[in-house]
Every structure is written in structure tokens, then in C-alpha cells.
Length: 142
Image (cartoon, rainbow, N blue to C red; front, side, top):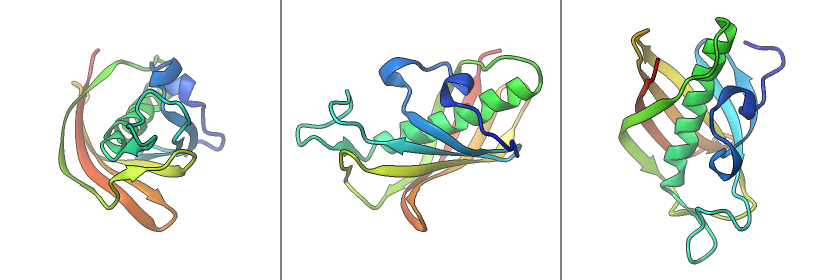
């Protein structure tokens, strides 16, 4: 595990309002744990001013991408662009995430093929409480 986790900007190709990870809390050869915050005025807020539950999928995808970016940086390369291929068993216990709330997002590696495909067990939580979970499948562009 890295003693001093890198910033999301160092690990992801996302910039501006597309970058949703606020902080990388932990990163290792097996997982990435990040922090997100539902920002006031964000592009993804619904008519009630809340983040819809589906946003958890993007948080999870960005945590998996940060894992991948770290892996490439550690090998002397640069973060790569990846694509979310799909998700399995997306479950959420909440319909929305209120503005100002913060959560941990974890992506744990299940499978990685050097040719590009990967799979992650992901979770959005608040302490011990799991608010959303899914298995994500992705592929990187070489």
C-alpha cells in the first residue's frame, strides 16, 4: 500500500466537473479506497437537489480507474483511459444522496488481464453502513 496516497488528478484522466473523487484514502495492489462528496450545484443533481442513486456507479468506476492509474504509475507509465463495460448486481439502499454528504467508495480487484479487461467488487458506504454495491467490469485502452 502507498504510504501517501496520490491525488485523484494524478491517477485519473478526468478533469473539472467530471472528476468526482475528492480524495484517495488508501491504494494498494488489491484495492482503492476514495472519498466522494455530493457538491452543491453539481451537474448530476436531480430536480430536488440530490444526487440520484445511479451516481454510485460512476463513483465506483472512478475508484476502479484510480486503482488502474496507480498500477500504471507504479510501473513507470501513465494512467490510461478505460471504459465501463457493465455492472452486475447493482444494489442501493437509498434512492438519493443528499447535497453535502460524504461517502467512502471502494473498488477491490477481482480479476485483471494484462490485455485490458478487469473486474472489481465495489462498495459505497458511510462507515460500516453499505449504501450501494456492484461488481463492475471494465477495459483499458492500451
